Image (cartoon, rainbow, N blue to C red):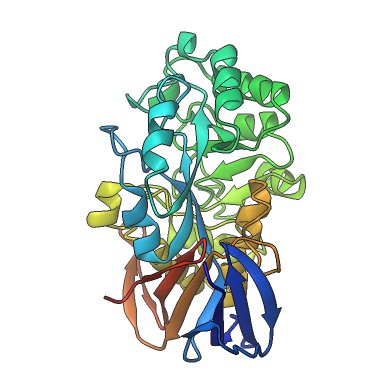
Length: 369
């Protein structure tokens, strides 16, 4: 593969930047690069960043409840890397891996601690499905694909098992080099306070700004619960995980005004909330966080550097020599757009972020066909 130079680009900070890459890796980064006889891609003054990472999706296409197709939520939407958040478990992740390898988009997985993943809504109601040895075997077989584990802790999932599935997840995590653990929260039981007591620094709380009574806001005072503040200060990481029922503008705005910020921005996208809303794609979720008050540089950091660091993707998330040649080229336009959260609340965005091209491992894809 011959060397390619991205010319006339800007980082989200407005700084001019040009990049050269070859063989899927970045070879040079500078304000100006003399292209010589190398192939040139003219970014025409558009912004670009390290490739966008959507760190909570559901994209194993052979499932029934939650499924999608990696490239339809990935490369076609300006996203270079997706992380499937526990759709599959140890018994079916091998099949998912084979399909994921066929995608243009980089695909990684968080392994559901239940051995079949989300085949049924209550995958943690039967604790015989949680088998630490099966998890260890899957991790041994697919160490580059499985980059963390997932436990869904809400009443429709756990049956009568209370906090026990999360305790089992923490035991599995401790036995496997402290893998990142993502915990889904929803309706009680278990209570959010009990969940946060079991979680530790570096664990990821997804659906952090949902509008449910078991969420971060005290329904009486309208303020963030004190035990949530303690968890936040202790280093538990907060992930958006928008989803069909898990992002509320009022909650996100209350947190923002109180200086409680999400660490990562993700969609929890699957085919139904992609085609019917309210999610649609990662860009739309970014627009919602911008409307809440997040500045564009912070937003881009949360879907590049922060996401890569959180899941130990050392070759991704930064524009540096030697890193993977994954880039998202995008424009920000001053045009209004109505945005809808998971509870039907609306906000009017004043700016839109629109992917123009996606580059994955040096291969270039056009998002504006």
